[in-house]
Length: 148
Image 1 (cartoon, rainbow, N blue to C red):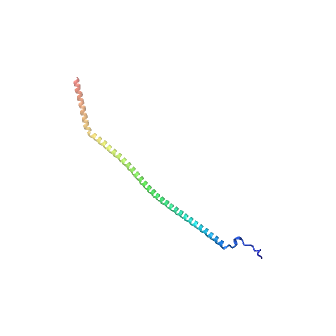
Image 2: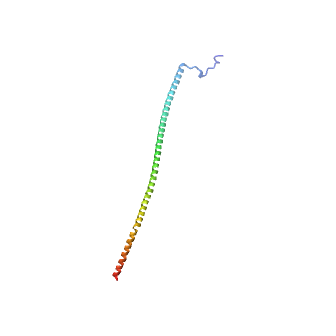
Image 3: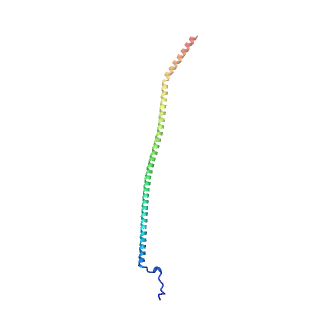
């Protein structure tokens, strides 16, 4: 085998000059460190966004809890108002019914009292009427005597 028969190694298998290798290694290290810095910045940004989103979510939960409590208080107040309105309506109806009944009872009592009073005064009124009739008869007789 001669030197002519030996095939040269491919380009990627060739041994690199140490200075070039050091330059490439440093460039690679620099590129890796830059990408590490960018990755760290990206992570920090994403963590900040995540923290802000969690804060917003916590604030939204707190607002929702407050709204729920306010709604429950409003429902309780409306229930109390309903009870008050119903109680007032029942009381007003009962007082109206009892008021009408009391007025009716007073009116009936007055009617019965007047009727009873009329029955007691009846003999005296009959006597007075009889006296008036007697006076009218006597007047008529006197007028007839004067005109004859």
